[in-house]
Amino acid sequence: MPVRRKDRHIILETARLALRQFTEDDAENLFNLNSDPAVMRYLTGGRSTPLDEIRDQIIPFHLAVYERLDRLGTWAAESAATGEFLGWFHFRPGPDGDTANVDLGYRLLRSAWNKGYATEGSRTLISTGFTDLGVERVFAHTMTANTASRHVLEKCGLALVRTTAYEGTDPVEGAEHGEVEYALTKREWEARKASDISH
Image 1 (cartoon, rainbow, N blue to C red):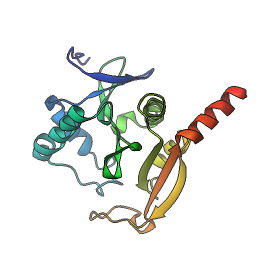
Image 2: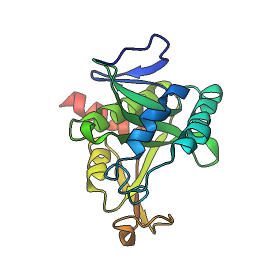
Image 3: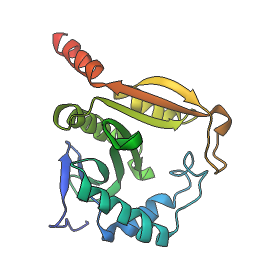
C-alpha cells in the first residue's frame, strides 16, 4: 500500500478523493498517466508526454500557479483511503486570467474509469467555486466524439453551449466532428440546488 505523505498540501476532499498540490515527486505519476494511449486518445491521438517535458515544464508550471492563486490550478487526485495516485483535476482561470469564469477538466488513470470519480471530483470543485471562490461560471471543453466526458459534464449540471472546429495539431479520433464547450452559471447551479431541495 502506498505510503501517505505527511507533507501533502490537500486543498479539497470528497468521500473518496483527496485533491492535493502537485510536487516535483509526481513526475513519474504524470508520465505513467500520459503514457496510456487510451487516456490520451482524445487529447493527443494517443501520443505520450516525454518525462523531461513533465519534469522541466509541466510540473514547474503547476507549482508556479499555486503561488499566485487561491485554490485555482491543477490538483493531483488520490484515493482518500489508500493515497494511490488516480490522476488530476484542473479548476483554473478562463481567458485573460478571469477567476470568475473558470475552466474545469480532469484526466484519470484507466483503472479509475467508470467508478464515478470524475463526477465526484468535478461536482465538488464546482460547488467550492460557486460557494467559496467567487466563481460565476464554470466551463469545460472536450472532443465532440468523447461521449464519456460529455456524460460526466452533463451529470455535473453543465449544458452544451457550442461546437467549434478542432484546432489541434495531433490526429485525434473524431476531429472532423470538432470540439464542444459546456457551461454552468452560478445562478443556474443555485436554481438547480433549490429545486432539488424543494423536491
